[in-house]
Length: 292
Ligand code: G1P
Image (cartoon, rainbow, N blue to C red; front, side, top):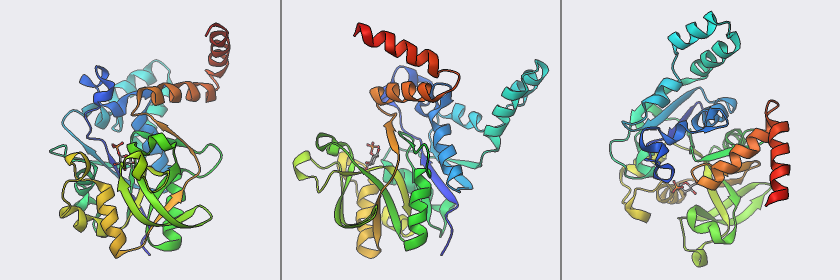
């Protein structure tokens, strides 16, 4: 069995939900407290054993590339002003992983974005992490590691799911479960954004996948689906006809940072977890709660 060392992070979206900030700033660079959301995603991949990451970008994402590069001038200035800790911190970001970039030339959907990684991935199984899904498993394994562990037991593709509210199923790819063994679920169908009344379950895919390379040939021939886009969900549906695909009900709390309220919620929760901010934030929330 081949080890999973490569991950793809699609980041070529326009970020229209966060305009005007995203007029010139990639949405992946919007910070939760002081760290861009994309950095949390890269950290999860690295903590899960990933060594090489391909970020799918577009022409407006230079600041994201700069973020993962060395900034020699800033580092030198920080060291000159005796800010060693900060200098170390920004250097560490550049050393986290081998990060590569490729541009998605047209916004043709998630499936198309993943297909841009074909030559990077080659003949190996690989991971996909979506940047809008920030998932924290405070005292346990990162979500991607949980999926990789299932891959290592089954040699099959694994998609990370959690149950969502019935009224929210139409926002996600939804699986049809057949049997469940612990958190691992045998599935018989997978549908992209079904209408609430047609959803096969409440198990929604929340932005983490481990896939076998057979997906690329399927994506090459994939016709547009929901929203006129090449959907990764449709390609995985076809993969299920050829190979076993499991769903895994992962442990962790997921923030939808592609949504404004999800973003605010993550900011508050992350501030409450930070030693330097938790007291002030908690006191402020208590005061506020008396007024509203
Ligand atoms: C994408 C996928 C969908 C998945 C979701 C998770 O949709 O197509 O299957 O459930 O991410 O966040 P998007 O949110 O990009 O429309």
